[in-house]
Image (tube, rainbow, N blue to C red; front, side, top):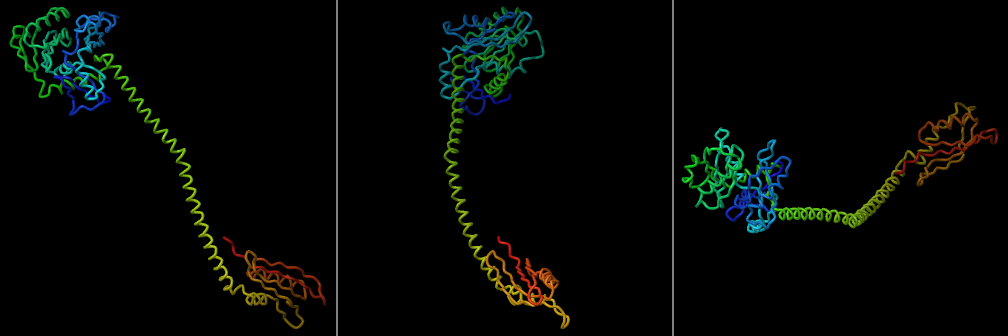
Length: 415
């Protein structure tokens, strides 16, 4: 079976589970044969089994004014019609059962016959390989003695005997009922399970005893559990009990739905009210991190400015004397008394100041423009200056060429 089914039996005035304990919830209920109205019914072809059986069961019911919820289980089918086992549970005789179920908090999903489960468990011991024979089976229970007249695998009579005082008479009536239902056949044997005094039945047929084992209830409930997985098995659940079951299931679904809806509502409320709070906390944290980062950035920037200042004043390669020496070394030197030369007549050195790069600006005179451009190229190639701007040359006194040169150091990249 796809799902585990809880099966309980009501026998001897108490509920008995298949397992170790009864779990509140839904369960299949197995009842003694004496608690139900049971009858073998022949249903003509194309007739409704429940409708046909309802009138027959109502006629033998101990509560004639009470409507019965009839269920039918087909045991044989032919071209002429069907043979069904019809059963119903009169609610008037089930008050003690309902009280026990309420105390155990059990909702019944299906009602079956306990002796049918036991009969299934003992089936391998019933058959001896012969066919076309009639057997009478007696199953001893706490509430009644269940009697089945079997023609091979088809019941022809089903009866609950509540008193063994007149067992012979009850067996005689059952055999007459079976003969009327399934025709005249000799009784091959009587099969007995449980503590039953069958000595008075030996004139009818040989008596053979079989054993249900140590736990007869467990055997019967296992059979009922197997029957619960078969859609064709009868279900004698009264209509009022079915309405209670549907109502209970509806309430359980409604409760589950409300729990889910409440969870969704709480989640939505958490989003509506919690997100702004969390966002505010995250914003405050981010602002705090930004302030801390800004403080650290300013601290690092101040330290960098101090390092740059120390580096600037400790960089002798860009000092005034070193720069003057570099420029002087780059001046074209005369080869003799009559050679051309360059004279510098002004000098303005400046260090780096903030974003403004430092450098040197000087003026001079040269005997020719070629010397000026040669000097300018030498300043560019020396690598000390990032930018060399030449203004001039222009003619001055005595035919000499005047020029101005502005040289700038390469400024460092600001982070």
